[in-house]
Length: 254
Length: 300
Image 1: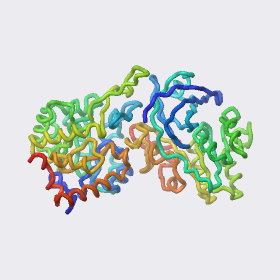
Image 2: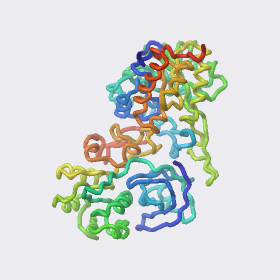
Image 3: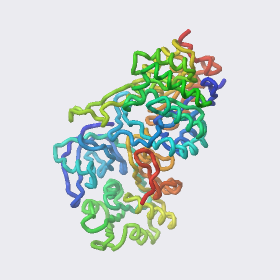
Image 4: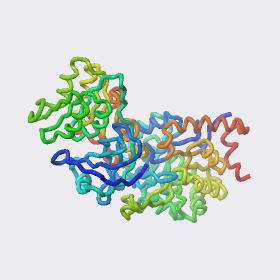
């Protein structure tokens, strides 16, 4: 469960986002995550952006820990634990639409590869769009949305999803992105009678279902999730509303 | 034949209890554990002030179990009122508390009683929090003072959770008995360390942590056996229990009930239901009509 991996490749996905590839024989499924640590940082959960024998994590430099990971290069080691959590439930008989928002796109990449499903990648601006080059190799229909309209659809990924799904041809939406995006996406799916599976995020410590610090209502994001079904999410009072800090105190989402 | 049991005056319909620190920081999560076949659940250890705990890394798998140094994260006793409200709706909840002095324990225990706790469990045994837990729980005189003070301030049962990281276990157990403690809970985790060879550094941010899981079970069974030989206080056994056979060992060593922690992660919340069923089968096969009939039989 815990291992040292050596980085075999680093790719720049955008001005602030890099993918780190490594060989790791542990079996992992799309939507699962690992805990990653090197000395000088706090251990953090990272979604796997590749889940074959060659695996990868995709890191956006947004804080001290992710910036520490960005210092790493080929040949450097990372201590990882996992893979953890319940990923996407991929079924061939259901027509799927995949939505990735911002760096959340990394978490849906393995599902994109496995299903070849129609995909929306949303971002703030054209230079924030990541991994569209990889996605385009696997899917027939790839649509981009940007909040500022600098590339593709002018608007957010949920607006574009509603437009694309209005035909009724999809059975399920799989998505990962900021909670505000997922919140509206979930509401849209409920309104449209469309099923969905969303990958959620909370502050994690053990990652393995022990400590209970990442719970949303009574569900552990690390173990019962991070991918939850539409109905599980409908039952969560915390979703889109509040999270717990490292003390376990309730914090309202902004 | 029945698997209900008593820890002193406290009656439990089922002998398995959720150990402190496992999925028990929030009310909803505790209520979920109680609906899974546990007879009661112990809360995360709660202190006077909100505590973020240690920085990550705080946890890792090792051969035979887990090593953790969460560092007693909790929202503080005042905010915990709301969590307790949601938790006790699901069943019996034992409030775990930690403090540095007898008066801190008294304040915390009073609040837990007010919030509806079935009992309080004094954390005298956490191996990775400076000034708390095991650092005070190996001092028999201080343990006696704390347990006496809490006993005289609340009317719910007072349990003392002890550390195996001492050669003074018998003395500490006697201190609990002298102070009128209602039960001894044994054991907490074994003080431990994990080093990452590739980096030449300890893995946990706190360097030291506590080992739990199957690796500590035989230490726990021995500790319970020693405590039973030394005192008459009811015992709750904990440490590395994941099936009926583990639970039976603790009961036969002298425990009236048992707690489960790490196995909830490895086997899932259904671990209580499966132990309850298997323990009943064992009791039927071997002619034990109650848990009480099994308690301490290994001493005879």
